[in-house]
Image 1 (cartoon, rainbow, N blue to C red):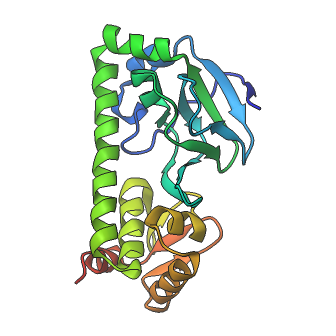
Image 2 (cartoon, rainbow, N blue to C red; image 1 turned 30 degrees about the vertical axis):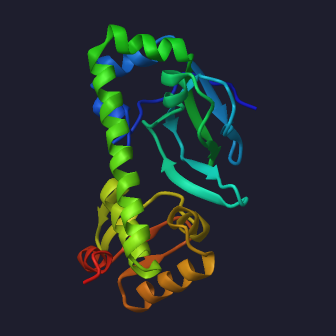
Image 3 (cartoon, helix red, strand yellow; image 1 turned 120 degrees about the vertical axis):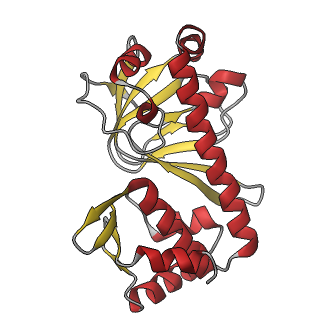
Length: 234
């Protein structure tokens, strides 16, 4: 269960997130009056199908956003990090939650009611535009994922997903580009609609080719340009 938390330190917003599109004064206007809450690793922040309309803005930590299929499988829709907004669609259209959000690690959030969030659109064009930009980025990602699912094999899709994650969340290091996002083989499998065994095999091939290096908490892309070529089927 979430609990109240003290005001957090400044947010290092991830690329493409809602807060990344906002200047500090607009961030303050959005979060002013929000309730700060903390969740432990493995807690559910939002349940698929729930009628609630509150909005969560991630301040620290990462979460998985997933959806269940009719045959009981779980599909990973996205990993969200600091600066991302969760539950904005339910606040906008008043319909039930479309996905389940579960924390990967301890997270801090700012919670606004759906009414508070929508009121920001009417009173603050900067926040409204930033929300549209954030939703647009997610739509583009979803469209790219559908194309990849239809046209690429698992190895190519794994290469493409790692290259995408590096572009969105990577940092340059001495040996290449590090993806410091809590990302498991099962996460990748759920995101790509593939089996964990197929993903493990694809990662092994990429490691054997000297393209990546993996550890428990990080994936290091040693030759990002080669991964990009693999993802394009070249």
